[in-house]
Image (cartoon, rainbow, N blue to C red; front, side):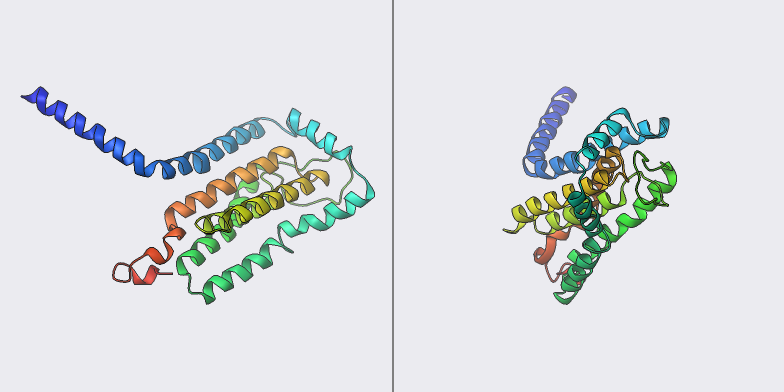
Length: 239
């Protein structure tokens, strides 16, 4: 009798797992690709950088290859474009989007966007202070006073794009935001490498921790709930 009951319970549990996975596999996939994998890559890079001084072998090779393409017109282009990853691009656009969400009374989306985009600044400063990685000095460039790992420009541009992708995921704009945003984040990362102020590992680490941060906040705040929240359940959280 005990064995039969145990068998029934195991069968019931297996059925529950099957049903749970059928409905929850998208969230599980997001957790793996958006949290576990990016944090794993960031952790592997962080361990290597903590143990070694200067750039990794592939860091130097990639920087040298990019620097070999330098020419005056690209110098001016990279110098201008790079600031759009922070003060001249991401920051003012983030303020405009925040005001738009405020005006539209999209409280949940506003909370998510504000915490995600501006919380990245705290994470970046803390990580740089912890790792104390000196910036590359392979060629002349106006010296920067802060540390190198992870890249603030890479984090700022990627967390901005990731947050917008998540906010527009259930709309027809998601593919355009994803494509344009990916191009923007890659372009900003390229400028930092072209100018010689970051190692490639700084850029990759910045991207990875930004994706993980944006996804983790989306799981906590759930901005996609939006208007699906019922008035009688949680009126304060209604968008």
